[in-house]
Structure formats: C-alpha cells, structure tokens
Amino acid sequence: MVQKLVKSAASGEMSRHTTESKDYVMSNIEDRVRKIVAEQLGVKEEEVKAEASFVDDLGADSLDTVELVMALEEEFETEIPDEEAEKITTVQLAIDYINNNLS
Image (cartoon, rainbow, N blue to C red):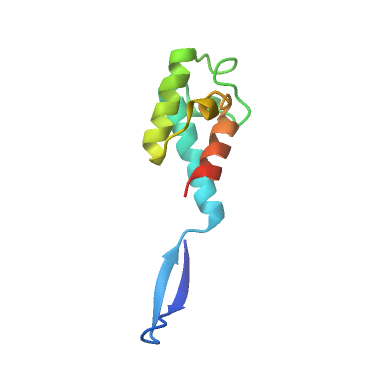
C-alpha cells in the first residue's frame, strides 16, 4: 500500500489517502485469477501456470470454460462478452483481460 498526502482544495488541510500501487493490484488480480481457475477446474494452484491452456493443460471441457468465465465475471464484478470469452484460452489471457477491462 502506498500512502500519500493530499491537500484539500476547499479547506487547504492535508490528509492521508491510502492507495494501492499498480503492481500490487496487478499481482492481486493474478493471484485471484489463479485461485479461481484452480477451484473451477479442480487442480492445484501450483499447476495453474500463466501459459497453461484451460483445455490442453488443465483438462477443462467447454462447460468448464463457460463456468470459469462466469466465476471470473462474478469475482471481478464485470461482464465478459461471449466473443471475448471465446478468446480467453489460457491463464495469462484471463489475467490480461481482467487487467485491461477493470474500470
């Protein structure tokens, strides 16, 4: 966590605001995605490598991938359009999608 002093324009008073650094947020997203993948596909977190394909490496079938996308949508409070979901075939692609589409 990073703390910074922020000066209020209205009062001129200084106050502390805690913000998460971008690197921390990105690694937190990566950890959360890996955990969801492991839970949804019934594999150990150690098996969930960035380059792992959901189907070829982690044994997912088409229903598993749909449920995985739904779990990601729920965890990150977002909606992944079907045409985008079809492109998310690896752990890294899931991480990248979440990182690039969270507002």
